[in-house]
Image (cartoon, rainbow, N blue to C red; front, side, top):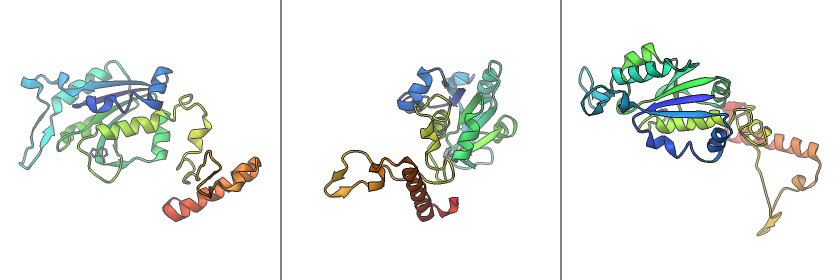
Length: 223
Ligand code: ADE
């Protein structure tokens, strides 16, 4: 999969996408990430990319031209399955959406800043608007990093043991069960005996039961 990200703050995306599983995905050639600084697509003095909003009001708006230049020059080279705008008023990201996006070939993501982008970009270029939750971030970069991570780890071959993505929380609308590692006992706190029994069928049943219990208690809306 190839993901291109257009942003005014490329630095914000560097670290989150160059460690751990995202690093491995790229090293294995399963995920290609290209970050494009928006200012380099501005033809204005000081590489301006934002301006006052028509109608008045506080806050700057990201201008049409640099974004159109960026999107069109990328589209001339790459065929994108989706052009995604990260915004708090988009559709809320969930595991199902991440699963669906992980099946695509090429994605283009646009990070908003300030008061957002000129509505005409949304009307004419954006195919999908995504929010990572009901709160407002300073820009779309952290949202894009979250989205790339959620998608990237689902690409076949990225995780060592592919079943580990399948047993994540939300994958079957259930939260993940509790997990334990050594030591078996610490300060008198014991690991549930069933996990030490070696009976894999019983362990699976226990885990499923714990998942259902946890989901009932914490996220009954998922059931
Ligand atoms: N930009 C600002 N807030 C955001 C959010 N919650 N999700 C995605 N992009 C955003």
